[in-house]
Amino acid sequence: MSSTYDQEIEELLALYQRQRAGAAETRRRINATTGTATAPRQSVKVTVTAQGDVTGIEFPTGAYRRLTPKELSEALLTTIADARHDALEQVARLAELQLPTGGDITALLRGTGDPGALLPEAPGMPDQVRDYIDNGLDAGSARG
Image (cartoon, rainbow, N blue to C red; front, side, top):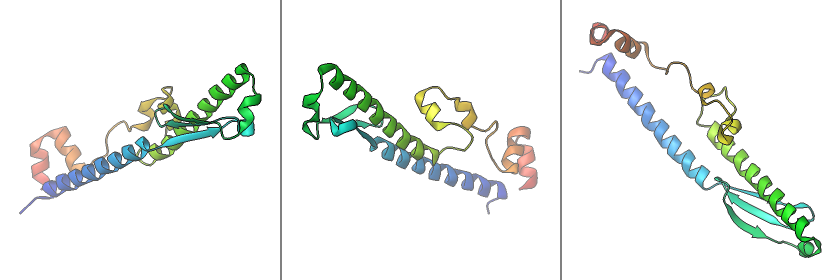
């Protein structure tokens, strides 16, 4: 016969396993994310990974031929930045599904956010588990 305490622990472990599986799926989806942007006049199109690595540069039209080297360079740099922004926004939407509300995930991904804003002061747990943590085994076994 298992006690209420044992059942609570089993439920917490099951919740943990579901959260791990969800986090693994989110990571898989993030790793599969790409961002794409096209420059004005379709002179250049860029694709990047979720990590911002450039995986493709295309010239969909002959418009790039009419650009000076400086204009082409600027078009490339701007389009790469736009593609990275697109990828970051997609990753932020995916991550928001796994994280608690209350913080700016995009700022966190850029390295400018406060990770503490996404985490509660104390982890959520049933009262019996909190009693056990605060008072030891005697408090937990007295209830169960």
